[in-house]
Length: 144
Ligand code: AMP
Image (cartoon, rainbow, N blue to C red):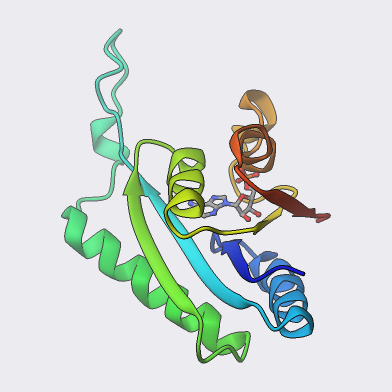
């Protein structure tokens, strides 16, 4: 039975459904559930004439992290989870953030959605796929 479950939460419309699955498995197993949201480091050094700066939100890092903490707290509330760990981490990529936390906290099941809100993931490979290939434990991709 799983003892430490990690739900990788984006804030897409389907996050609730994926979270419900993670919560229900955690309850059945008597496992500890933690929620993680990764704020990726934005790399604006693409060069080559890309004019990315004007479309980036004018927010300091700490404000972005705080906004994510609030959103994660809201999601936990909507899931009726009161005792979960809520982790917002900053990492180079979502995959690295999730896998790093899984290793640090001896997670034995990671729950992700089969896809989320990154249209680019269709081209680059989804987070679910990336996590599956680097995870130190089982991974459940909840079909969306
Ligand atoms: P995507 O790569 O956007 O298709 O997302 C697939 C799944 O990865 C989502 O359903 C979430 O479970 C997870 N995920 C995506 N982005 C994040 C993020 N920033 N932090 C944590 N989990 C994420």
